[in-house]
Length: 285
Image (cartoon, rainbow, N blue to C red; front, side, top):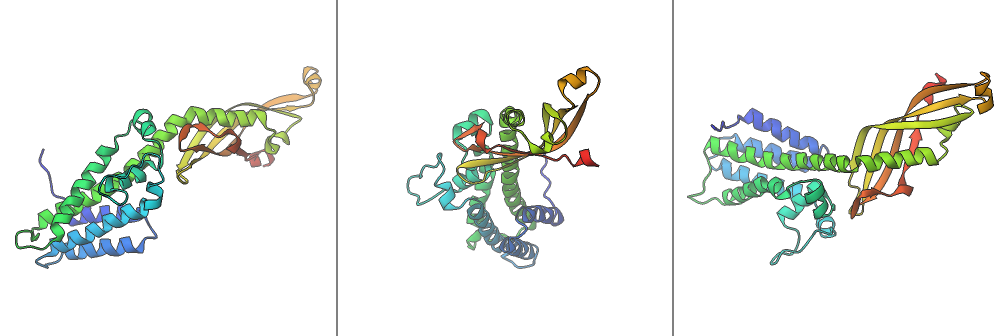
């Protein structure tokens, strides 16, 4: 396979994609702008200066997204000999999976964190070598510079993609548990939004639509679900219905449900954390 070195315009687009991950991070934007300005300049050591900027950028991202106190609090964290805190790989692991147990990530979600981290870690080593300006390490070839910048941005963007995949896989692993938790709440609790619609409102079922997951902290996963609840609205008593003096009508309404599970037991929803809110506005239109 022939590798085509991307143009600066393509590489800048990746930089913009990275900046969108942190729209309020002015430092990231400043360092990115500086890396591109020097990388595309005529400066004879532009590659080395660009590498220095990118090394600071990767360090900034890893520390902002994976602070020491959060990484070290994870059940999977083990201090590596001859280190004083989290390694780069452990920071990448935290960005992707948060405090989820390693066994759950590997056996249930089937994610290979080593594969995710490896390209970025290799690129960081290249950056470290290139930041030292020696006669034999001057980096001034435009294609080599573009490859280094492109690899760095790809490595960072891949981490964010992996984090999104992780949340999607958590979603898949929890889907039936979430479905049952919402259904239990719909069946066991009297929801004012449904109860007020008829003499007797019966829940027939529901379906899940949009689904969001937030690794809130090192203890809980927060989940939010938008879906549709299907109901029967009965007007009059059962006797009235039998005598054709009442009516039973099917209907459906959107709902939103929020709930939590524990990081150490991610597949088990905390049932008393489930809150369901139904939007019955369409009934009154």
